[in-house]
Length: 111
Image 1 (cartoon, rainbow, N blue to C red):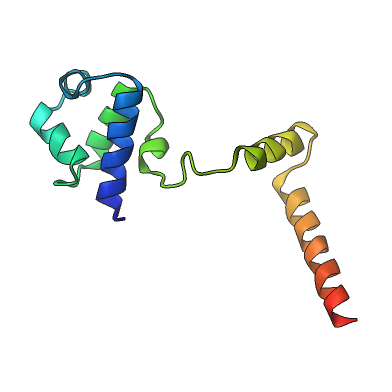
Image 2 (image 1 turned 180 degrees about the horizontal axis):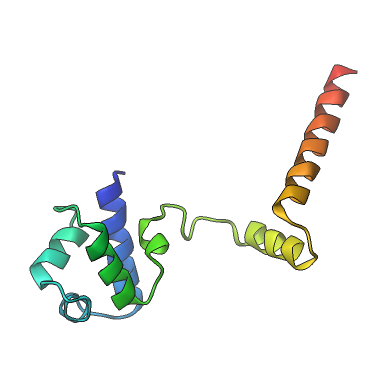
């Protein structure tokens, strides 16, 4: 799936979740309804400024519209990472742990 198609789907899905019509979102974002429709239907490649206007109108971060990973992350993994952070672990601690576990696995294979 190409970037334009993903962006269009993200915008449309977010708009529908908020129960907004195409007209309403276009008005709030300050763009024409036909232009918004062409973005949702993957017919045009919007500028960063337009994406920002749409994100603001939808009240979502720009990253949510651009990211192909939004909504794909396993909630259990997200929860584990948040728990680790809440316990005071930082990214380097987690990297060290992963390196140690990797070393343990490779050491067992070498035996």
